[in-house]
Image (cartoon, rainbow, N blue to C red; front, side):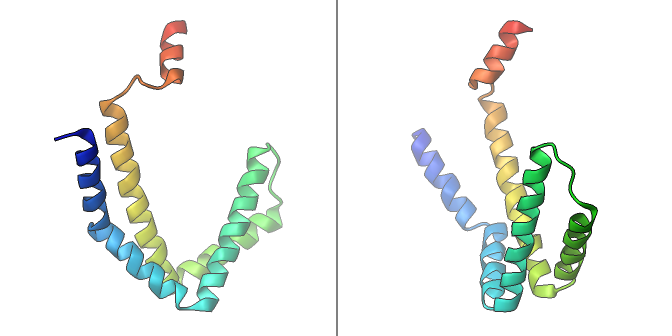
Length: 120
């Protein structure tokens, strides 16, 4: 069996996994509720802006951080949004774990890793 066949097998397993199916179902439920969907988009936009400020080495204004925190608390108290965020986290975690497994199995292929070994 070729590597590509195994990749297609993995893709099929992921598409049929409980984590992915729950993610799809909760996303569909969220998208049907326009108010919750828009609020989550607003939260994510604000979250992204805060991360950009932090990446630039700037300090996030206290009122902006508080507003983001309050919005998250409000959203996570909503069962539809909370179900989506939980499902999204579980699926994302599974994908991260799989990437880690693959990465560890073929370690040393990144130029950065090889460069670090040469100079250490």
